[in-house]
Image 1 (tube, one colour):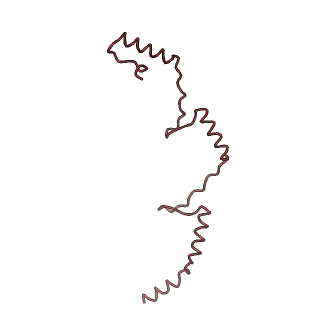
Image 2: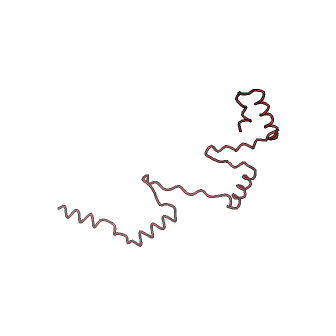
Image 3: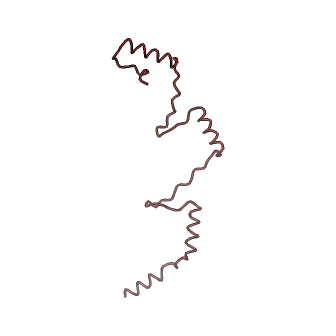
Length: 114
């Protein structure tokens, strides 16, 4: 009896596909972007369309680099502008020497520790 039911199950199945048919279906699914990957077995989201050309993005990136506003790292904050000093290097060195003479053995101010 078991062999009869087993035979009916085999006969009820759809005919097997050829390797060429499976390859063609796989290629079509890849082109359509519907190939499912991973264990979750959900359809992959559609790709977002771009509203700018590569040349436009490159130009914007170059302009941001020149302006010094390129965001770096994971924090995504604007980079601070470079600090400018009101004193020359020689003036700072002279002040540090004067401090060392006036207060020997005392910790130096931050600007003198460089």
